[in-house]
Each structure stands twice: as C-alpha cells, then as structure tokens.
Length: 107
Image (tube, rainbow, N blue to C red):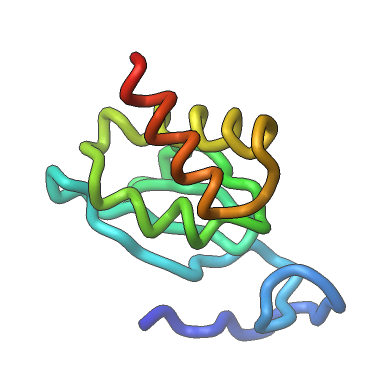
C-alpha cells in the first residue's frame, strides 16, 4: 500500500487524495521482474526514477494494470502505442486496450 503524502497543498482536481504535488499511487511488476511506479500525474517510472512515459489521466489505471504482460524494455513502446490508441478510439479503456494489442501485434 502506498501512503498518502503529507504536507500537500490541497487542490480541487487531480488525485483523489487532493494533493497538488505528483506522488506515487501505484506499483506493478513487469514480466521480467522490474518494479514500475505510477504517479498521480500519469508518469510511469522505475525505482531509479527513470521516466518511461506518461499515460493519459482518464485511462492511466487501465493501462498501468497491463504492464505485467511486458518486459521493462517494452514499456516505452507500450506507453507510446496506448497513447496512439487513445487518440484513435477515444478514452474508453476497453477499446483502447483492444486497439493497443492490435497495434503491438502488427509490429
């Protein structure tokens, strides 16, 4: 469980905790065992704070949950294709997931 940050300036939009500062909200393990972190602003990083991309906020949890199917070397490609799928089919996670899988299979 990731703790809610302390001493945050409250905001009306963004993370459900109300904190304006980006903070970790999720953790997933890739297929090859790398730990990936999701931040409240949609950024994906590893534990060394290397940025792998940013998911659109409306679909970040749906996308982040799929990282376990990919090796860490594929995460940037997955993020790129997810963002392209969102632009193509809209912010519906189900159709974005299907379009992303379709795009990745064609590569």
